[in-house]
Length: 253
Ligand code: UDP
Image 1: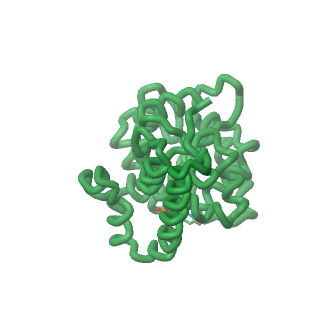
Image 2: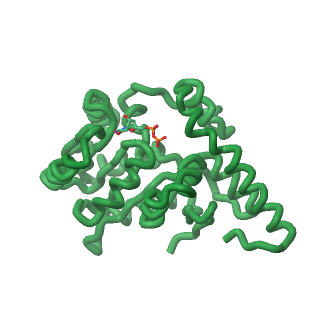
């Protein structure tokens, strides 16, 4: 059982990056012949899940939820529990790609535009010599074509499947297909293929360190403002819970 901190009913793992990598590697060994899933909520996703039941169920079905955004780290501090650190999905994915290259695990990339995911495959193979990407597929398929995508994953038989189709599409797709995939580890990775392919840039390290990566992404992709509109409400809700807690009335779990 992992340590978790519940942020608005979503139990997010309270682990260091190293502990998270170890946990993911255990999942990928697949001793129980089960598909394990990792999802990467941030404050926006937690807020969408307050209204979107299917997303909430998908998140709750995951074997490991990691605190991908600095908003969740802030919330954990307000709630008096504190994650040891932010565990960004792209960093976990990078570590797993490095481990896969060393251990001879094969991986599959699902998501992003065809050109982007193809380029991400090329760049990843250059960056992690020995990495075997046994298959890839873009993330713009219809519901009817989903079965064909699952068949393509079966044919590639990867040890780890990375799904980068944005939230909430990727979480719902993973939850819906988990039992048919026959892949030891499946991880949702948001826009990571865009970063690996160099289509989009990550914020400079100093911005990541001070918890401002979200701001960098907003400047680069102003249309994200719509999704971020729920963030003030997130802050208010957490603030309200933490003051209630300090008044000694409510457990924040
Ligand atoms: N995407 C996709 N299929 C879709 C919609 C989006 O594969 O139907 C991809 C998109 O090309 C991009 C990623 O999903 O690579 C979304 O990235 P974003 O950073 O928005 O992810 P989020 O912040 O939602 O996790």
